[in-house]
Amino acid sequence: MDEHLICFIICVTDVLRQEECLTYLNALEVPDGYATDVITIEGADSVCAAYNAAMQSSNAKYKVYLRQEIFLRDRRFIASMLQAFDDPAIGMIGLVGTEQLSEDGVLRNGKLVGTFTAREMNPDGRMYVPEVLGEGIREVMAVDGRLIATQQDLPWREDLFRGQDFFDVSQSLEFRKAGYRVAVAAQTSGGYFFDNDDLQPPVEEEDRKRFLEAYGKQIFTDGQPRKRVLYPNMQTISTWNIPYALTLAGVETVLIEFFGTAENKAEKDIDQVSGSIRELHADAVMTHDFFAPVAVACEENHVPYISWIYDSIQVALYDESALLPGNYIFDFDRLQEQDTKNRGAAYVRHMALAGNVHSMDRLVIEEEDEKRLSCDVSFIGSLYSDRDYQIPMDRLSERAASEVRGLLERQLNRWDGEVRFIGRLSDETIDELVAMQREDVPEYRFIGKRSFIEQTYFSRGITHLERVEMMRRLGETGWDVRLYTKEKDQKTVIPGVRVEKGLEYDKEVPKAYYLSKINLNITLPSIRSGVPLRVFDIMAAGGFMLTNYQPEIDELFVVGRDLEVYHSFDEMVDKVNYYLRHEKERLQITLNGHRRVREEYSYGKRVGSILDMVSEDLVKKGRPALR
Image (cartoon, rainbow, N blue to C red; front, side, top):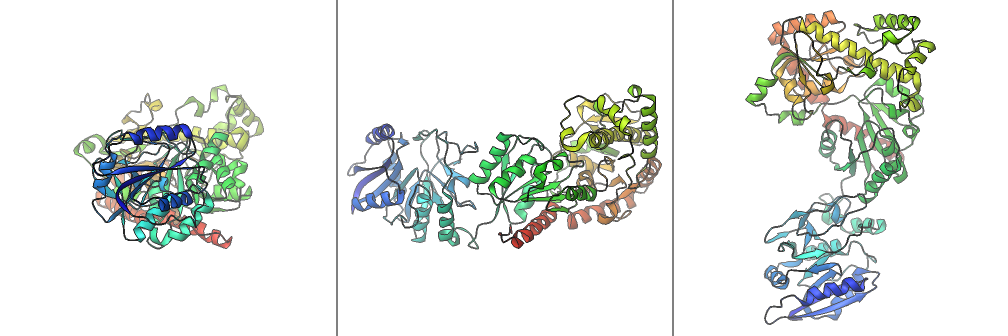
């Protein structure tokens, strides 16, 4: 073997790129006493077979395997390579690599490190930008096949891989198995360029399975990869609660961007999710609330779709996609769960919501926070002050107005677990209310005009009246009362109440919950039995919870020990006055409630239960469990 010869081995499919690649190679500085050689391989179907043939035909100690699209612009590349190989324990170096292969075995899906100058994107549009290695070398598990330099010859696994995939990661692991270190070496800025604007094609699935079977024990601690769950970031409530809980449950979680809506099955949204499922080799997809385009994408790719519902009414559940057999729907509201079952959904279970006690434990309260957010009583939420939600009594006929007034009298100021307005309005009154809506109400085609009027329009109209009245009565108590609400409600003036702008959900809201002596909740009447997310958020943050009564409260908590409830405005005001004057009792209930959420209703426990239930059903169907 010639210890002073460097052989560049290039697989060629494009003559023009090959010529430019060779131009850069010919311009490299060759240290004194060394020589270079070039072997080009045209039209190779198997990279491993081609590299084996070239390796056996060259007696060079140093071999550089590279793609024709790599243009080495750093003229001192050879000197840098030889310096890295001064350590005889290093058998292979590359430009880009990963310290831990991803669960699917695909190198580009792991956390990359190295020096990378390119514009390559994968099918779902994510850019591959590794951690930049500024100097020296870093040991990795595997390097990328764009450029691989070696100072030892080991056979490439053409017995396993006969195409274009996994030649690089398998060779990296063969070197490690033989006792050599694999590393990436820093390059000067702009030292090379990868000239390929083409989308990165997906790997061959059979090769991927073959790779994991051959090398799984070498890659993963227990010999098996963790299951991978995709979590589309819907830009709604906190992005991190469910992904964090999935990680705690031993599942690898990958966030993907999603800009569609829950009800609209747009082809572009379905294709985006489908592309991510295929490219990232997802074992399942999970979302907060049900999203029809996600359900369709999962069904197309034969992966389970898990949705955890926190809204009611959740309009997308009325779409036909909710009946697909791959769905696993978990609903916080028992009555909505039953409705979905009655429409024919195959797998629907009740699952109460959760509080993020882990992030709340790391909450830092600054002095400025205390000055700004400390108060006696607060409510954080919408007043639904939009005209769209206000019942236009002056525009209704006398008959319809009388009917609506009677219904409001029966519903308002009563929280006893009964919803008194569903199915109670006459068809004529429904028609009058529908006529006052805009013509393009999208919910009509999913839930029908009556359900929309009752469970969306009327529900929010009632909530507007209740929340305004709640704040008005609290304003008369003389306590320091705050309302944090959306910009459109800022013109609201309620005597005795400080109306403040809305707070940021992840960063500010938990602090406000903690610093308010009493936190209030009024639940939308469309949530007929379940306990809303606000209750769990408040208790997870260490806040005192005073909420209207909901039928499922007694299943989850002990009233008077973990939280307090009211059944009318008078009872609400009485309990506010009582607990602000009895601090010890208030603090004890606050502590009990936080402990209850931590022990039974943390995201980690709830998501773990969901995964166990889904896994049990998958195993019954002869499919692998998620954990």
